[in-house]
Image (tube, rainbow, N blue to C red):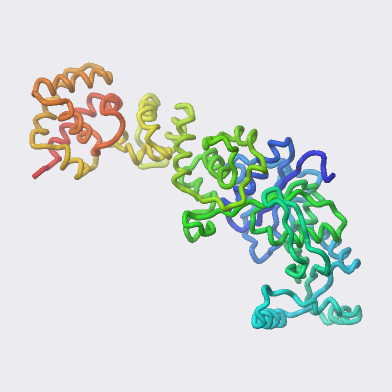
Length: 487
């Protein structure tokens, strides 16, 4: 038994940002660990020096902290199995690659890039199903190897895939999986710069860190037989594998930056709540089978299981994410939304205006059923924070008639008689004005909404009037009478 309690890891390469696919992998590992009372480990796979981005590891940790996936062991949370940066574990990988070479399970390869290119081209001409290394250097004598090293020839260390039965393993999502050995390449384990490839470092670290379950993306499924062989060659127990389905665009192509935002940081900057993003990403390939779509983090932890992860690709539907974001905003107490709205105002053109908490709470109560983002309070109902700069032409054409000027003058006069009017007072005054003129209330309701907001939609018109207050309402009606022109 690898460990008494589950231990899982998220092992990203620090290449600049956290892909939403990486977030899904991290989230499933986190939910599984928390559901089982296990440990969630962060390990930074920074052995590919060509892809190294300065500060990326720190940015990744910051993003995980923002999203709420707090790891139990990893950078700045050292446990007994560190260090958690692979670049600091090179001696460990060297030890095991030497062991594999001593036992004939790996070998040094001195082939040049030119020879490998010619080999690939020849295999392509022969229409072989896939390009594979031809084991040329496996048969070098000890003397040839020593001579090459003394001559300063660079080399890599390759896995020696020996003939034998199919490589088989069990996968929680894919069930029983098998690969013919003939399809498995003599994968490079140690590169010419002395750094390990993903394959060796991954297996060594997972074993030494007592990882019980390897939960990762489907793209690593084809690499798993190489890893299974390494576990076998080193005499180590296999972890449980679970390969997650691909994330797809609406057109069923693989999710990529060319077709939209894929970085978690992008969604954060656009105003998505971390709990909404977690909720949405959790449903990309998993369901609890209860027809529920709105989850808080504690609910996801309680309900998550690998057995409910699907095989088929999961479509990234932004409309659903937007809906969930709105639902999570609405689930919060008004006081919490107030703080978010005040932060939004502080970063807007309204930063120098002074709005009371009481006023903002009224705006929140009027609008929160109509928004998907906190920023929508400003963009969809900017009329609460400034006078209309223009009037929607389509609404003017439909709702503002030649007699609207006189109707609005009468309404403004009626509003002038009110003292500290409530919502009901505004309604009573409007209905009285309509009755005095001899028209239906609708002849007043639509034009007054246009006059005070500039548009034809929004919260209930009497809520709107009450929130704005008597003085602003009358002032805006008079402005509209002077500004709105019709043919």
